Amino acid sequence: MTGSLFIQHGDPIWLSPSIWLTVPPSTQPTWTAVGEGNNNGLTGNIENVINVQVDRMGGGTDPSPVRVDSYVCVPTAAVGPGGSTLASAGGATGLSSSNDPTLPFPQVISMPWYPTGNDVTINGGHLCIGANAYDLSGSDGGQVFYPAVLDLTDQHMAQRNISIIAAPSQHSPVWLSAVFLLPQASVFVNAPDQAAVIKVEQVPVEKTLSPVVREQLLMSSRVTVTGGAAPADAAGVAHGLPGPPERTLLRGGGDLALAGTDFILKPRQRAAPPVMLQGPCGFGAEQEFPLSPRTGHAVTALFEVTPDVPGEVFEFDIVHLLTSGNAVGGLRVVVVTVPELD
Image 1 (cartoon, rainbow, N blue to C red):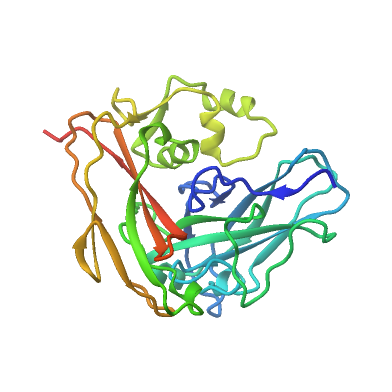
Image 2: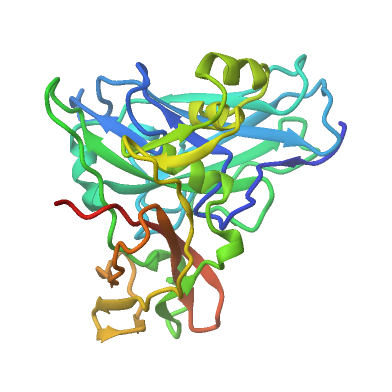
């Protein structure tokens, strides 16, 4: 083989650029799954495609195929076969697919997923996808079996937070929000002396508007690209390069702007506003509470920022840690100021 396999992380583990969803026809953001129907309680009617980009250090081809296993999980449990997995995505077995060993890396390995209408009600529709890539020759990485979970510090594994919504009617708008985090308690069944710690970490200005965040902002109808190449030209620039459609469009250059305005999105120019957490321990800058298997605790982030500069971007991570300080999960919150309505 030409080198070790890896799934790029870049950002925190909950913002992997190498996992995304497509829902043909592609009318939904690439972090949003659409659930509809309930066929014997197992699968839905709409194909959602989980895409995982895999690379090899050194690139090139390799005669041995690479396999990717993916799992759709509830964030209140671990990521992987030992977590609380969705039956529509294969449960603890997950979904799997292999690459074409005759083609050079990087490659995108895709797996169809048919979420049900009932899946929309699970954890308020806030889920995550975990992926594990390994060489079928056994020379790099390896399969993970129940009750084990994924080690998200391993370069063969990655996670992406997603939302799942009900299939909209033809004339109904879709609004998405994610304002709470449920601790991944079941990861720590064997560590009863540990506690969950939820805290806020401000994203430094120089790390604001990273490529993955720019992609996610562009998925919103309220954000567009200005000054870049036309979509057809941008697709030409990205010819042969994998990635979601927003990544292709951003390769054409330009700035992100509030749709229908001249306001360009830029990192915050002011000090970050304080973010307070409201949860089981009341109100404060940090929440700590005992862990219990499969039990979630809603934690709401409260903050206030005035729209003095439309297009100003604030970012912070809501991070789930153990009292030992080890980070085990999180959620990126992106705030964009918009003009006040007259």
